[in-house]
Image 1 (cartoon, helix red, strand yellow):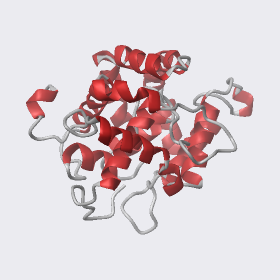
Image 2 (cartoon, one colour):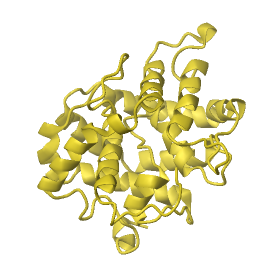
Image 3 (tube, one colour):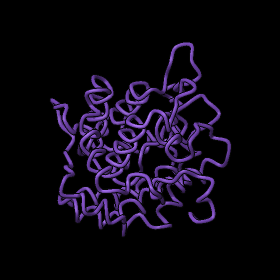
Length: 271
């Protein structure tokens, strides 16, 4: 299935949304202010997880990439990003189950393969060059490997894994995997929050849509207005979520959906 086959069914980011220069400039400005809305633990644990990710591995101290402290910080991100509500449907699974699913050899092998690409992208500090490299490196093979990981990440007790797995993988491979949620990502992509089809297909559509957007001339012309930041503590508010291009893509969607409430009405409590 390619993008054109589902153009009339799926509300894709690379179609008329976010494409106009005037609209895009407003989205970029609004996206920089999102940390003022999602402050506190949402920002703090996001940066802590990314900082733990780049520490040199010290297994005896449980520090470093995919070591316990890194996974604990990701585990803390999930409820702060709406994945655990007392009395609600969104529930994070136990840490032991979460940790075991990520440290499973088959999962870890795929992650380590993708990490080499992610690390290459993180070394590129110029936004335009990183954007070009992202388009080049996130090819169909990389997308297929991300799709393969989605059902293997056990982070939620719900029957679906797209949201929880993408948020988890974003803090493991931040330059490759965008976070996906119901409230903004799915409503933007398909105008509803239902995950009623193959989750791998939805992930593939969304990531391909992101790459198409990065290839869009309006976006490339707007890169002069985009600032990437390194994870850090303490954290300032303006642009604090601009930690990778996939996260900026997510920020733009949040900004667009929030500025068009009539077009994207919220009918229920969603992740």
